[in-house]
Length: 332
Image 1 (cartoon, rainbow, N blue to C red):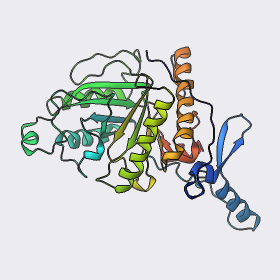
Image 2: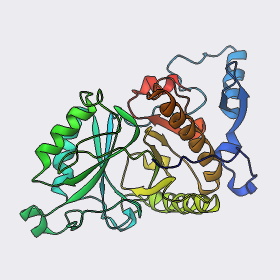
Image 3: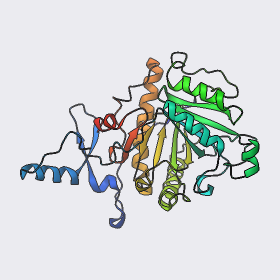
């Protein structure tokens, strides 16, 4: 079992006037009756109050409220990440991979998303040949990947598939369908049969993935790259390595306008519009949540309901795995 990270105390460091954080510019703290730390957008709150006082139309129940990003994360019950040798900055704008395309089509039937990811902490398949760019590899079915799986059925950690290929596609699809739709979830949450197309024991570390797919959109390449570097530096400053947090990069996740996009698993929280100087504050919140959830899991062998777990860093929060848009908005 990996040691859990102990978060730093939340602190705010003023940014330069020309580069103020979304967190510092638009938000302030407000203590709720439940003593839960929440953020409110000062600008939106003032405008809404003035609008109501002036007798104009009041906000409706569909109004996303304080956070304009909540509800923008796509609904998914699982995230499958195919490990690569190279970071997304080296990926082509669009993949030619047959394995990725066929698995994506199948995953849609059980609520899964499939993407490519890179991290020094994630092993690539020894027979990995690329993202299907080579026509001969595609024709001969040589593509091979190791895959990470995060699912709503197992929010306490990452599962790994030793091989995803055209040969194992049927078995992988069947196992993931079974896992995601819950029939496997009734067993021991930390034990799974290993083998091609199967899943291995849970990796309970925190996983952070930043979209840095510059060939798809320059905002992801520039903004995402800066945030990935800032996260790497901040983790090193705190003395946190791969045993605590896996930091990786992913290909296109949707929502270029929200760059930089940061995905936090195993809980499946998505964050957008993060900038490099926001990283210490965002990381504080994510680490605090991870420590709380893992402690609760150790004590009760159950994880908190995604419908009740407060979103970390609400100004940046786009949504959470397993929640529909209305359910995401209800948490803000």
